[in-house]
Image 1 (cartoon, rainbow, N blue to C red):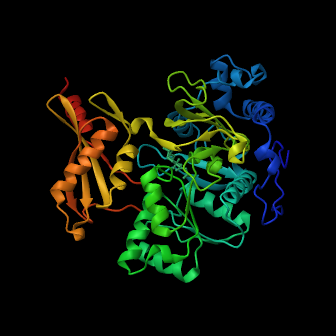
Image 2: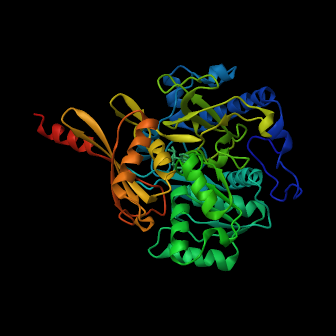
Image 3: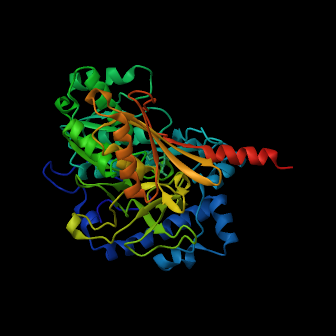
Length: 469
Ligand code: 8LQ
């Protein structure tokens, strides 16, 4: 296979011909079964490697009675215990600064990224030069499949902080040979400048979170600029649900008159674009030869059959510094069998990742994802651009309230609109929601990942816990 070796070694001078559809045609289109055999061999290499170098993995597997030599099939691999993010955090606290899952000498770490640390202790990602190059090569390959080419100017409009997302997009675009424009996001007043710079620099490809793309479009209009006139031909996203949520996707595509591509998994398993779209359609492919993805039953962490829902469990096949072997995502998705009809023989997640299992809430017995509410609300032509989802407990029943901004300039009846929206929510979610209309620009906009859910019940739980003897 093309440039398929362990440890990975890529030819940084390689680039396909401009008109080529695939970066690595054989790796991307070979029969999935054949690829699986190579993946199994690679998994064994990666496990041997981690066993020899990482007390974290060795200890975990010894406890489970597993030795890398016992893995004879991909079904055997399902017995390898999953790694939880809390375990990584705890191991890192005990083994500063990169944890005992660092498999290279600490001096070899040349790049540090990390989690934001807004909840709990931040986790550091220590990346050696080899992995940095592998990620660049992998991302260039997936971006190539999105139709991004060296003649493009790629704007990175997400925060240039410890966040892997921005840097992964940056080095991928750079490796592909495109012009990279790292404008970032998140600084006060920056969005207005972003719009003007986009125009000035002739940005053709835009990377950010879906929420921020909508914000940029909103600000462009207030600046008297139609976002569709900016000349953007493609937008690609990661970080949160949106690019595969029909109404959000449509809003972005219409605003910029451009194609929308979803991508993204978890920073820990960078190349995070290994879940990446190869066509202007919702959903992502699982680029299994980069990071092996198993969609698993959340209860026992074994693979569910194609066609079913489960939680992705990821294994990096190219990382040498902090390899992730069966990292549990706790997200939810549904997968479909590989089909050459899609141009690449990878499994497919037709709705992308719906959201985190933890973010799901249950109102009167119905499982509800915030992204399902976003989808309904954002499909409405009178929706004013932002909303909040409030779950509160009145007496014994949980209730759902959606506060949504209404476009008053249309002059329509706000109350009637709220009732209509409540009806649509009931039809889709199966439970009633109270819609409270509010004025446009009531809620803060985000330059990063949206946080729209306000869970009043946790407040209630906290009060109860404090009351308990
Ligand atoms: N998450 C990430 N990408 C998502 C997507 N396309 N659709 C739905 N949810 C998505 C660095 C990359 O942007 C990936 C990333 O955001 O990594 P993080 O910061 O570690 O956050 C990971 C979480 O973001 C995932 O578990 C998903 O819940 C969400």
